[in-house]
Image (cartoon, rainbow, N blue to C red; front, side, top):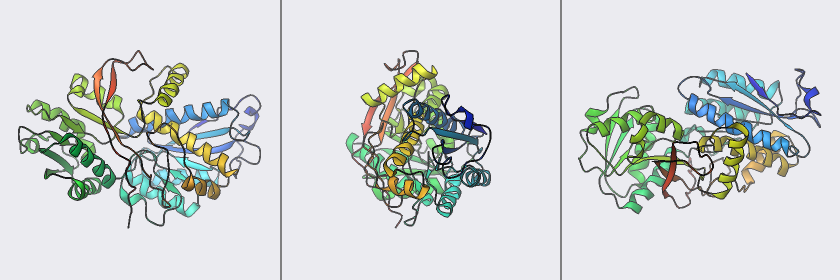
Length: 390
């Protein structure tokens, strides 16, 4: 467990290990929990989200905290184990008085902890966990913050196809729930026939599937096979395929750049909500670089947004009661680092968000001159209707 409090001298005396309920006790620090995958296959997501979240808490506390109370952030590695994540979530709420918890990446973790959030009546802000099964019409305490569910993401990619005028589109889908949801979204929303091939979740040789697509393929959808997406990208190039666009599954962009090198600039697109082209993002990214020495990417942005959203909900609620904080999040309109303000349905789906699709090119963004790549905008959607579980 990693506990970050970012307390000033006046608050340092509260860190002696005693447990404070109700958000840290009246006048004390407000506890926020983060259940992050800091080991295992989802580590790149967990570490980037944690780093952005910690920076948000640092800035909030440096600016006087929330209504005069500082935030105390407790971060625990769940290794994407649903049972462990659930146990940690319960401990953070029941023993440490967490007002809200964030961090799940795996859909399995999201589904398990979402049930616990409803049971405990404590807000849970998902990082990724994109399965549409995480939320139901009865959900009141679980909120998406970054990855839109598969049906909405496919509606977004259908907009990209229409805008670009593509006719030749292929997709490799994994044989599990996320892949099936992507397939359903393609069937429902795409304006052209998509050639789809289904591959095992553990596949590492996608060449037999790629060879079944026409040589003039204009768009490859790798979104439906997150475990194999990078391999699909690499192997299509090895076979001589050069689609104008290859869509991925919301990976941290540094992961794609490190894995593919110069090949990342061959039509690979990063899908994100953080608007890295806005002045608001540039200003935060410059402060982040100055404070940490590191580059702020889209997923650091998600962590930053989660921290700021929790703080803003506490301010607007005028309370650290988790029920009141959740009620405030459901009714909030919060203008932050995204292309559109954050707004929610009653059941916790994001309303009217714009997905941005970005390519890679050599060079550095203005806010981090030491970088060896930068993102360049390829497409951004119109505001997307929220997914309705009904």
